[in-house]
Image (tube, rainbow, N blue to C red):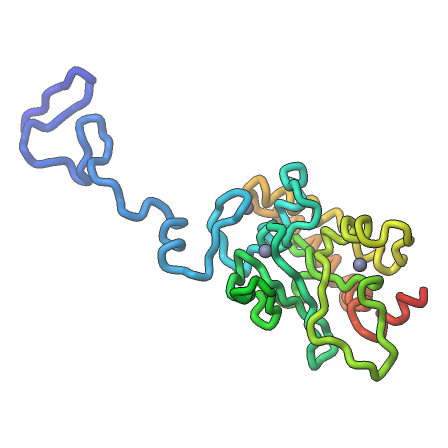
Length: 257
Ligand SMILES: [Zn+2]
Ligand SMILES: [Zn+2]
Ligand SMILES: [Zn+2]
């Protein structure tokens, strides 16, 4: 076949057979794929995905806590409300901690984005239909899920009950990252109990790893190794300390302190 040069210095075939995959003489595709990206695919076939309110990225629902946790850590200046929902960064959601058989309190969040069905038509939140995640997992800072933004029970809003008293199944809770803001607005004149203040301390790893994820990177192997070592060293001891104030018996002790 004879080739000739077009005015744009492109080489074009003089036969009638089009290029495959159907490009014009400028090498531009003539047919656009129906699905342009993997994000498009997931928005079509997975109701388990939502678009982040802040950046528009399509994220799996179960990853939204960490995704928004990174926004809370890195994009603080762009979040105008002082107590945003930890799952969608909105201000019209309601978070609860649910009493369970094990004594461990578990999150239940009436989130407008992740669990719109948890609001009745009257607008009343119904935490029994709320979005949940495992409290223990959310308290661990790992390279892939560095955000430890989880729910805390405010010791002032929910003073411990005398033993034997009935405790409500669902109690209003506060996101850890918003706890200081909650305290400042609701209990400004009272010093925060030391045990509660200690719970709000963030590890250096959390800030560092959130920064890496925000830049679209992967936490490097050496950092992962360090995480594995330190989690082994701290182990159960650390977990017990973190967990303590969320449990009923310990809540009473905190209040006395
Ligand atoms: Zn986002
Ligand atoms: Zn929400
Ligand atoms: Zn409170």
